Length: 320
Image: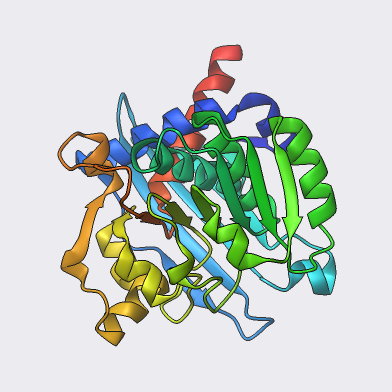
C-alpha cells in the first residue's frame, strides 16, 4: 500500500484540481452514485477531543471504498504544539477489498474543505466580490481563502484577530501567495460590514459576529462547527440568509449553526434552499439577486475526501 504524506500531496494537488474533484463529488452524491452512511463521531474525555470515522463507497469509472479516520483536538496547538486535525484517508479496491493508498488526512481535509467553500462561492457569492473577511488562521482558513481567490477576483482580506500567534505569519504568507492585501484587525464589526465574502473556519463554540452587521449581497461559508451544540453563526445570520448545505441529513444531525436556530423557532429545516449538489446539477438555483445574503453551511462529507483521494491515486498510477 502506498503512503502519501503531506509534502507529496502538496506536490500532487493544486487547489484548482481539488475544486474540480470536489464539485464532481457533490454531483455524484446528488446522482446517487455514492453510498455514504452517517459518520461516527466519538467524543473523548481528553481536551474536548473527538475521533471521526467516515466511510464511503464511490462508483464512477470504477468502484472504490474510502474511509477517513481523523482526530479533532481543538486545544492541541496551545497545549502540545500539535495539529488540531490528525489522521489517515484510506482507499481500497471495492471489488476485492485490497488497500491501495493511505493519505495524510489533515492535508486532505484542509484542501477538500477549502475546495468545498470555493465551489459554494462559485454558485452563491457575487461574482464581483472583492473583499473577504476571515475568521480563523489555521490550515483550513488558509485553504478556504486560497479556494475563494482561485474563483473570484479578491483584492483584500480582513483577518479577524484573536491574538493567535499564527496571525502575523498567516497574513504575510497568504498575502504573498495570493497577491492580495491581508489586514489583521480586531474590529469585527467593521470587517463584517465591509465583506463581500465571510469565511468562518474556527473552533469557536459561540457565534463569531452579529448577523445585523451583514451587508446586502454578502456570502457566508461556515465550516468550523460539526456538533449540535456548537455554532459559529448567530440565529440572526441564519434568519437573514438563503441557506445551502452539503447534506440535509448531515446538517440535521451535526450542524449546530442550524440546529440551534431551529430549536429557537427562528429557522425551519424546510427553509433550506438546496444541497450544493442540486445547484451544481442545475436543479435548484444558486444566487438569484445581487442583494440577497447567501449561506453555505458545511459539516464535511466523506465523499469529499473520497474523490480527492481517488484523484491522487489516479495521478500516482498515471506517473508510474
